[in-house]
Length: 112
Length: 114
Image (cartoon, rainbow over all chains, first blue to last red; front, side, top):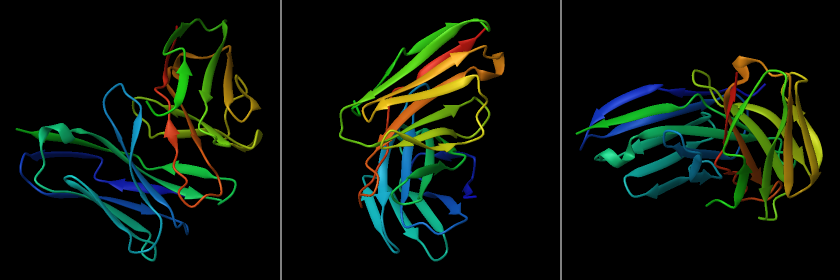
């Protein structure tokens, strides 16, 4: 059974600082997703990572994928308050009969 | 707007009631999902439908009954629920078997069982 683990679960950081969220998964997969969720809202897609070594950047967020280590990272650069949210990684299994399994989420709070 | 619409947005029901949640997408996706999000638990996959066939039932109690009449619509029928079933229920859809498969989520139904 596929397991997806994120750490940390909670993260408070000051504006302007850099930090990284980690996502480990237990079985082979070539697709990993990052989502953002604001309180009381649904999930918003951030990144789709399709292959080993993939790196994508959008604003102050950068995501990378190492399929050999079964690890993805979400790096936050010079954090701003607007980035406060819960971030989920999700891993796709069973290509063709997809199943998307989510990590536990990381609740990020940016402190002014 | 992601293209996935859920109704109702909020639902309060008694333990003896029967209600249904509805999810609709016109993105041309053939996979649809129900997830449950409780306050203190990770996002839990409940059911997956691929091309209208149920391909995943993640040990969900029978008081939750999914229905997928076509690739655009997904229902979750609820009966004799328990207070611990109160949660945010999220529907998602994706296009299986494509390289850029990405799941898009609806806004969710906030369910309260009293």
